[in-house]
Amino acid sequence: MSTYVYGITASSHPALPDGMDGVGDPPRQVRILTAGELSALVSDAPEELRPKRRDLLAHQNVLSEAGAAGCVLPMRFGSVAPDDESVTGVLAERTEHYLERLRALDGCVEYNIKANHVEEAVLHHVMAENAEIRSLAEANRKAGGGSYEDKLRLGEAVAAAVKAKESADAAALQRALEPHADAVSVGPESTGWLANVSFLVPRDSAENFLAAVERAREDLPHLEVRVNGPLPPYSFVEPGPTEPAGASAGGTGTGAS
Image (tube, rainbow, N blue to C red; front, top):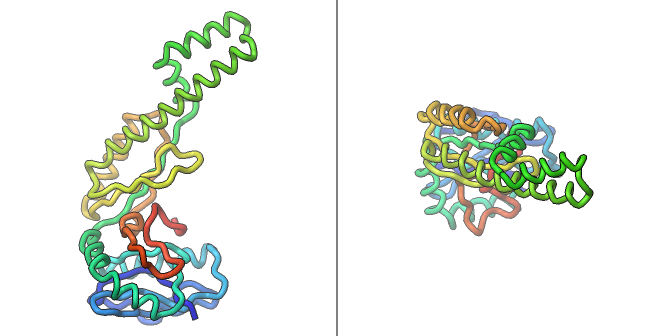
C-alpha cells in the first residue's frame, strides 16, 4: 500500500497524540517512520484522494499538532510515496539536507503575501505619471473619442504602463517587507496577482512583520494586499532531487490555505 507523507521531523521530536487521524474516509491513523536522526509523519494513503475540505484540514491539523511541539518540514497536500521503505530510504539518503533545514526553520513560520492593483487607483497613477498617455487621451477627447487606431494606440500605451507599474510595485512591496524576514521565496506568477511572495519569519517577530505589511499598505494605497499565515514553512524546505515519488515539499503556499 502506498504511503501518505505529512512532514519530516527530527527523530527526537515529541510523539503525536495517540490515535491521531489523518486523511481518508474513514480517516487513516497517523504513524511515525524513523531512519536514523529523522522521522516522517505518515499514514496509509487512500486509494482515491481529492482535495476535499475534510482532508485538507486533516493534513493541516497533523502539521499543526506536530509543529506545536517542534520544527516540522511540511509536505504539500497529496504527497504520496510508493511504500514505507521509499520514505525511510529518502530520509537516510537526504539526512544532512533535512537536518540542515530543520535547524534553519526552527522557530519560524511562513507568511504568503499576494497583491494586486485597485484598478481605478492604478489608472489614476498611470495617467498622472505618464505625459504621453495624458497627451494621447487629451487628443482623443478633442477628436470626439478618436479613431479606432487612436483608441488602440491609447489602450496599448495604458496596458504597457500598467504592466510596468505592476513590476515596480511588486518590487517595492518586497523591498518593504524583506528586511523583516529571514528569507524570501518568490512564487509562480498567477492571474490576478502582481506579487506572490512568501516570507520566512521568526515566530517571535511576527508582530513586527505584520506591522511592516500595514505600513506598506499605507505607502502603496493603490495595492490590495492579502496576507496568508502564519503557515508551516512550505516554501523554504528546498526539497532534494530524490524525494518520495509524487511528493513535493517546496513551492509557495499550500492547498490547505
